Image (cartoon, rainbow, N blue to C red; front, side, top):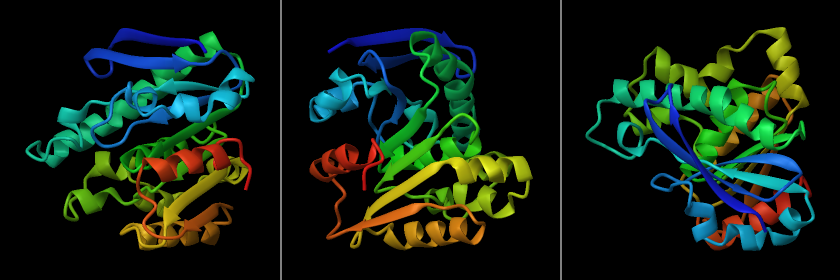
Amino acid sequence: MHQEPVTWQSPRLGRDMTLQVVGHAGARVLVFPTSMGTWREWTDRQMHEVLRDHIENGWIQLFCLDQPHFENWGNDACPPEVRARTHLAYYDYVQEEVLPFAASRNHNPFVIATGASLGATHAMAYGLRFPQSVQRILGMSGMYDLKRLTRGWSNGDLYAVNPMDFMQHEHDPARIAAFRRQDIIMVIGRDDPMYGNNAEFSGRLWGMGIGNALRVWDGSAHDWPFWEKMARLYLGGHD
């Protein structure tokens, strides 16, 4: 199984950023890490082994991303306006740097954004911010209102990356048509504290005519053994 770390200096983030390429072909999967995870997280957690047949058969290729923890949600002491600004720049890095790099390695046009916990938040926000670029979003145990992390504070930068906010004011016909072409899947445990947020967000999308699948699992289901099963079930779109 091909595994390759790749690093470059990101002009948008002003730092070296590394990602891990796993696999050789198939749908390009942008993997966002959990709150303090890095580009090593999915391979450290053996997720590539969980998905070995998908990867070796050339069905999917993983691009496991890093994130700027200490100017984003990994540092409670960081002012919220810095966190929001960094969050917005991070998505620009993914869109303008990572996605072209992935396309240079793999011309498959089908792009999936996925992640667990905060990674699911990133996957959903990025996928909905750039709906023409992402064909499937798989959020596992995610939270889709970032104001929960800022005690209700918001500004223009946070609004731009907060799905619960920016989707309710989305009226552009071309973008709404792009949302309706996406496969949007949210998987959440019934006892997960974010279950209500997932149900509300799913309903909001349905209210806009944007189809989505809300899959509710027993218990909390907020840990790696559950995310392994979710990834195997839903990365390929099987229900």
